[in-house]
Image (cartoon, helix red, strand yellow):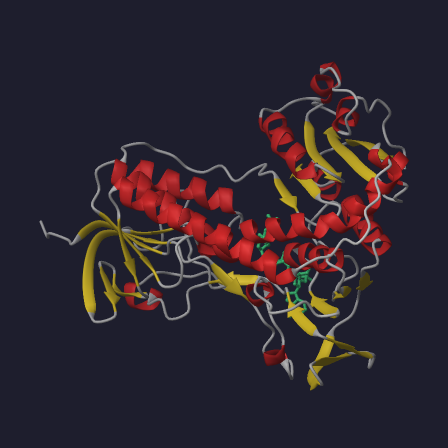
Length: 452
Ligand code: NDP
């Protein structure tokens, strides 16, 4: 038998790779992890975590305003972007160090540098050649920028947005997905005039139609300009900022333009072909239910596989891989009914089927909806409404989907995820006592079917 340098070599120290490395090492494997940038991956370094911190920061402006109706006076408030970014960076650094400590305490070796596959068992790292029995690709995804657009190099992506030296007075965000709507809320909350340019008819394609409508309305109420069926034709430098021209000829100036036009698997120059690893037409590593690629000793987890591109899913895939390959278990990750949140303002929490998908897959579907002013806004005076929606299969009474837009929606989605995953029926929801006074109680008190 050939002796390899390592039992497992992981490429990429993000959420999925780190979890897999730690679990495999605890199962007794000799493990190394290579990382070319910073330990923690997109989620920790320039994704979920810093994003949520900026969302918190951006909400205070409204909170100061809302406090007035409750008797508070909040004069002379001011905001310091550099201080926020410095504090955010400190927290990210702390988390990254914690990831490194966790890897080390599990007994995995961390190697800083770019790893490239040379064949199915060999990895090149600078001038080192390393062999491994099993290789895990966990390189994540990277921002997609439409490079055919003249002036695209003047635009930033979410990567740079986290570390702008100063806030622009106006920003143009291109895209209508998670990142576009989240950053629109962040910038707008921090006082930046925000224009969102989306090529389709309605933002957040793939989400329940009612959620898409509700969020669009609420974002517009907050002063975010959403231009749909709009495409950028070119970008030019103009003074300190840019001039954006749309396909229909309309133009405007902005301090910054940010592309939030999707993310693509990070496989460029990784050596997939040299190792014989097949990719999908969208450049994702093609894997089976055990995250195994077309080469039976090479696996892949997380965004590089383009299955469900969310941190907790990557972690679960990494855990399942390590438990199966090194722990003697047999675990496939179930990608159905994954709850998720969009930290737009107001935020979205969702799990299960949209009404549209449920109607395609089930004979008859009942809809329950509540649309109301959250209690806090009775005194704050803010013109904001909350939406809750349940999608129910009439034949089995099973709740197929829950969709919420409003404060706390993400937290609610986590708990609704348990109910939906367990196959809860509408009768189970109805039998559950309300928690009063909360917004979430609407979920168990909706009695009348929506008749349109
Ligand atoms: P999304 O895929 O969510 O959205 C991309 C957007 O860009 C879509 O609106 C798409 O339009 C548009 N787009 C794509 N190509 C072009 C183009 N050439 N010109 C103009 N518009 C274009 O990607 P994001 O970048 O927002 O986020 C990436 C992924 O990261 C998400 O899918 C999600 O999995 C994950 N994520 C999760 C978060 C969370 O859980 N809260 C937060 C942030 C990211 P169209 O709809 O027409 O295709």
